[in-house]
Length: 424
Image (cartoon, rainbow, N blue to C red; front, side, top):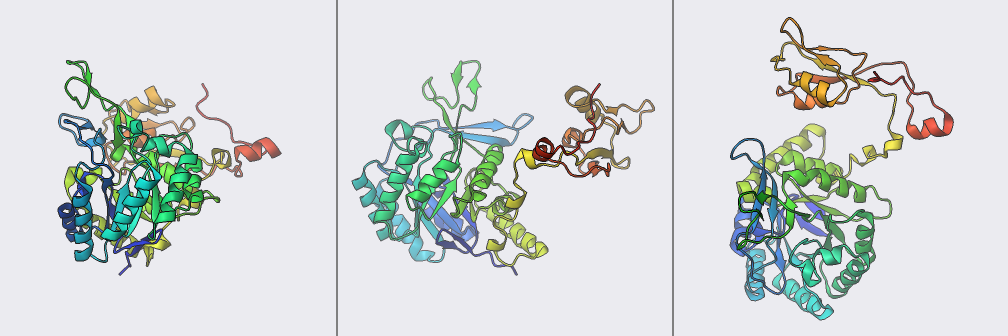
């Protein structure tokens, strides 16, 4: 059996699945129920000077159809609204009952003395590590915290260095995605002495409007504000930023991956992209703690089938494939192929190709399977994406006789490119 043991920046856990700092990790009772369900760790809902939250505070972007599954989630909730005394007592109780599970204290305060005090209290309560919340995109940033820190590398480095000065346990820095380039912010955390980073935090967003009341959602007495966007829809952004840091030769710190993780396949993708473990929030809010059972089973089966004995063997395996556009082979060619036994003749591929691609798929006048003009097909994948039948349309590699040629090679050495398709 593969070993799911995880080590992220010196914080160890029985498996790589952690609850992210959010409502599912708001109390000791919740975290203990999560650990009983199988979660390997939890990042406590951010601690600081307790605030008063608003009502309402959540919004969702739903998939197609009435009552569709939320694919994007938005919140205007802030940090803990419970006293620090209660939170620290519950952290102590959780660690006493689950000594091998990771309990990480997420922290957000302002002054150096406040950081010193809250770090000392976190350590005294038994926390295994700290996560500095430099990412909250609403509410707290207006108070000079959250993303107001995460968007300024010099402040990031300074506060991280304070935490490392006062902490005897590992320190992770939670980075905000609300920046144009994640690298300087990861390097600032490293310069401050961080043991690792976690990302991404939520994305500044407006989830939608009530078009009858003319008010943004979620509504608070006729007003609203921008919130933090998360859920399945942010996964591609999170994967990109995790990969950017993981492939940076200057960075080299462990990464706790966050953003749109809802099943074992998502977790595997983050691990292969360079994350040492993963944190989950929205999927738990929508489906409960027991989703971790499928995550553990799926990851175990995947590792067995691919010959991985430990999680560390997986970390970053896909990074060598993360290249720049100028290094991609312009002579590599694929074309679409339709399986006649699977095709239901809905012609969605025809519409998509004619209106959104290269007009190479045509209706069969006999009412049969659509036909593909391979001389015009550019292998864009759109037909495969819109096809409602899994496996019906595949992209098949073409041996066109041309040697590999990247754009950089073409420009510098004149490497020949194959003739263009789709030119009418």
